[in-house]
Each structure stands twice: as structure tokens, then as C-alpha cells.
Length: 198
Image 1 (cartoon, rainbow, N blue to C red):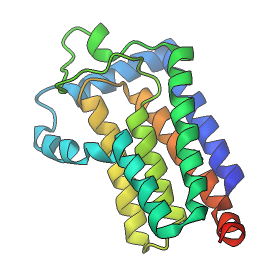
Image 2: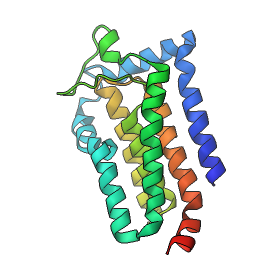
Image 3: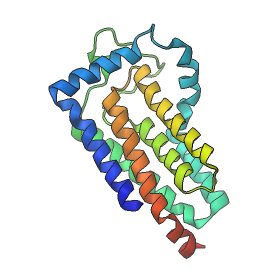
């Protein structure tokens, strides 16, 4: 499972870089415009806004704290995984240096009060939501419906970032797979941590 997760993270980021290929770049912009346009799915805006915290740093820190409080020492490994994601995301942003869509596309609708000023690829919010979804899917003793719900919430967080005008679809694709893959890799090792750290 750990190898599968690491592979998913790597392939997710690499496939997200397809936006550099002209044909995929054109598709990326088309899908951005379809999701971001004012007349597209406005009824879902309150849902995306309500789920936004699921991708924020403070929410991930809260989840880490709850894991440590209720799960003890094994959850230090989850904190380390969240830390790894927190290091990889800005490193990739600096390496790729993709401009955010609201800064370069005429007519892009920015739907955030405070616009992010760092680079666009990959999406950190999608990554954090993906990491949390993987934890619910594979490491927590939760019913299957909870994993499905967490994955759906992570997907809506990702789409919401495109809707907000701050990411292209390939940005959130790469971020989501990076987080979900790292979370899956961590979940594969979690039984070992439970056995040896309790």
C-alpha cells in the first residue's frame, strides 16, 4: 500500500505537468473557464465555500492535534507526513512557477477576498484535503461511507479552488494526488507505527 501511495503521488504530480504540452494546456484553460464562469453551477458555490476549511492548513493542524490527543504516539507519523506535504508543496511551486489563472487569464473570476500571491502548481488546499481523505479512507477505523464522503469532500475542495479562480484543473489534480498518495503511503505504514509506538 505504501508503494502504491508513493507511486500515485509521483504520477499525479508528473501527469499534472501535462499542462506544459500545448494540447493539454488548451484543455486546462477550457476546463478552467467552464468551471470558473459565473453562470456555471452557481448553486454549488455555498457548498464549495462551506468545504473550503477542509483544505486549509489550520484544519490539517487541527486533525494532527486530534490524532495525537486521541491516538497517541503513532499519530506522530501523520504529523511527519503532513510536514512532508508542507515542504513538498512550496518546493514544487518554486520549481514549476506557474502563474495563477486570475493573474493571467482575461475574464477569470476571482472569488476570494484575499487572493494568494504564490505560484499555482500544485494546489496546497487540494493536497491537504487529499491527505485527510486518505487518512479517513485507510487509517482510521471508519465505516466505508465515511471514506467515500471524505474523498468526495476532497474532490469538491479541489473543484472549488478552480471555481475560485486561483488554480487550473491540472493544479488541483496534481495537488490532490500528491496529498492522497502521501496519505496512502503513510496509511500503509500506520499499523507498524501502532505496534511499535504504543
